[in-house]
Length: 368
Image (cartoon, rainbow, N blue to C red; front, top):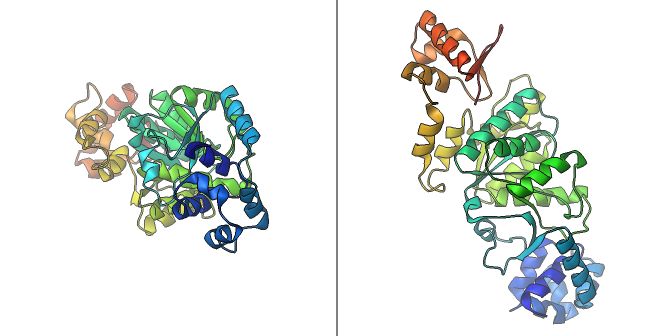
């Protein structure tokens, strides 16, 4: 048994987790030595919270037949199994104090995925939230940024769809083993993601989608990203757990504001009050991450900020309308210092080019 096989064996033991695994690996010179450790040593390292069952499973030693079954199952499902010892293990995860020791990957992880932004939010998203998530992820993908999310219904699904529709890359992090697909309604979306990114899990192949798995999934979403964008989230939301994980990992946290009357935006507004960067357009994200994104923001701003064949006036008006939001004509006139009659003419030009749309009685909305 080599070090890599020992890691795979340890990861198959129920209840061990990345935190306990890290403590064990820090305490011994090699993963193999964990299985030859004394009972007292294991108890001291893992602490009182470790169950007797966990201690006994480690003491029982490697079960080679279980590992062979696991690897055969991964091969049948076209899943690549990677460990923290492998040279292509994601650098962003290596920066964590306790990186997942094993990753299961269906699809491909590329070096360019180090320029990644996570986008998360509620499963019960409003049309406003779905539109904002899709547009922001489209523009991030056009800029070469990989979009990371959790494949859930609502905001997660819209984020993946936006990246794919722009021909970009996206990574879905799952809270279960890759013999499952949850939710089942996203099976087609998952297939498309494996062709333009990857499905990723730290759980063994047969692990079912248990409720207690999803906080670990959220931690991995944050870990694979330079920053996390929360689009819509009520006060009690898994997306806020992801944001908290991002803060603890030293990642940037962003939040998209919503209508003040919407319960689905209570959590995002709280994040903004607590210091998250408010996002009105994609440049708000790119500028904050400029150093980590290798200084390419200026080129992206030019690409995103001035659609083809627009006059300077039209480009100014287009930029003044927030992504996913609405603006009344009088508010736009003040923001652009343009007289209302001229502004209406420019808005008509933008409508004809399919860049804005009018919502009667509510104002104008920007389209990507």
